[in-house]
Image 1 (cartoon, rainbow, N blue to C red):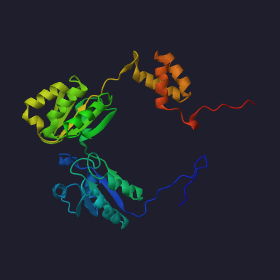
Image 2: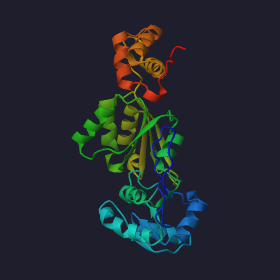
Image 3: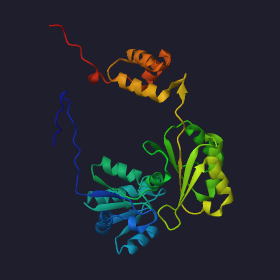
Image 4: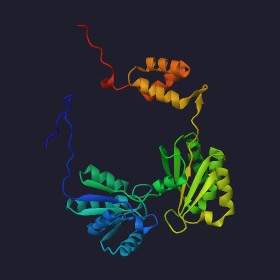
Length: 310
């Protein structure tokens, strides 16, 4: 099928699935089996094969649900080897279900290469949203969640971990991390050193499980709790850390300056946008101009068009 043309005469490509083979990316419970949706259960029940991070773990889940389907392992160490086999199954018209041990595949779990190659080959990739420790932790933390940054697991080595945290010290979005229980005290201690002990944070332990616990306080307080309470370092852990405060630039609210520049860039070139933004916010023109260049000029087709004189 030929692609249609847009208003500028450029041909738009149309991606059509090669066959009826489908890759279903299915979120599974992070603790409570009741969180597996009926739609996900039906998908697992009818899949031709289930690609699982740990087949033993997934087998236990399937047995609890009364489901019996073929399983194949797909984890960090064999994903590249497994992808051609699974693509061949998709080419044959099969439905492949992808699951991780808990939560949503690809989010600090295997599956990226399979999804990437399946999509590139034109097969239908169908997500089945559901349980995620990321969203569960944000929902229960009581910290700002309109903008957040998921960082997964920090490096295990202390030096690399401190370097990674130092790079995030001025990140204004709420930060979400996974952490191994045996490293939680070390990580909190490093966060105190890089973020400051007063930064608000929440540690969620065993989310959705029987012993679900939220520890709340400053990073310094949480580090003290981790050192004093044995249960703190037990089970699966998700950390939510308040973002850094928006810094002021020369006594001007940087967030306000950024918003002002963004609005003006929609109508004006960077130099003029910077000049007006400086007048409105009180920021130095040089500061506003540097920000305008960084934020980018408006697209050519969105710039105001000057009509010719009649």
